[in-house]
Length: 357
Image (cartoon, rainbow, N blue to C red):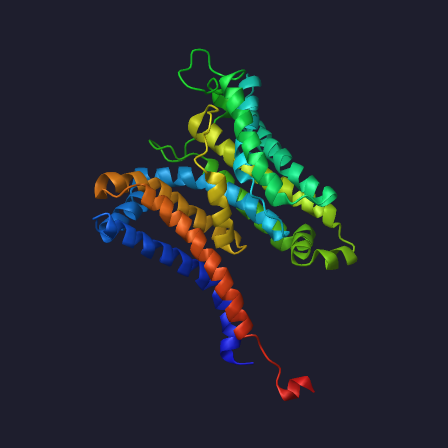
């Protein structure tokens, strides 16, 4: 076995996401040039404002929080070989659960009310993720289809509720009454919108890492994801594991909705998520199953979203370029997966004559 054959499998999972992001930024630079602007100026404004400016960094943290939580929700399902495409709907259901607790349990102290509101979001999202988990594990229904379809059910359900029974009397647009302040997530950077939702996301990331890397349950999830047939022969319940990871993924995505409602908006709005659940799919794939990668990629996507409007104002570059970069990142990571499989096959270690004997 050569040195190259040993090193390449280690480097590929690290280099592939970096190459995908770099390629997306390069194509984005070409789009900026075609629009008659300077890509160096545009990217400098984008990342300076979102990462080094105090108020811009506060905005980045605000946008990173739901991306991080939803990304974790997609990742934990992927670990067991399941594709949770329903993070967007789970975000809406999590926001609904937290709203109901925030509105209809007044009079509680903040140290009780806020955890209950977060728990409500986790449970509502978990139930929404558990439905396709049950259908996949027990009925054999493809989870990609059910999670995708449930997105539309959740969006329309929340839309109906904020337009009818939950609407603020006299509201000019569909939104709920203001939540009780004891259910709000506190601000962590004064004079910005950055709230403790990012701390919830980091705590969830650490807890998930402990579960996956340091517990028997994590080993079982990994085993089911790698080979469900072997896991079943080893005495593991594949059915229970699939239902568990889908419910857990839904709960984490539900917390993303909770962070938006409890930390940023303090009301339930119609269509309050700008597509965080779909970005979470790209984040989970870019991370390559790594929790630290989820945190870093969420911050990158949060910075893109935070700096997009500033880039438009300062560098005259349309916001749509940022969305194009996000889409191109997904495209290039998919290409990198295909190339990686090809390279791994090319450099697959071969036994020499002595090893065969």
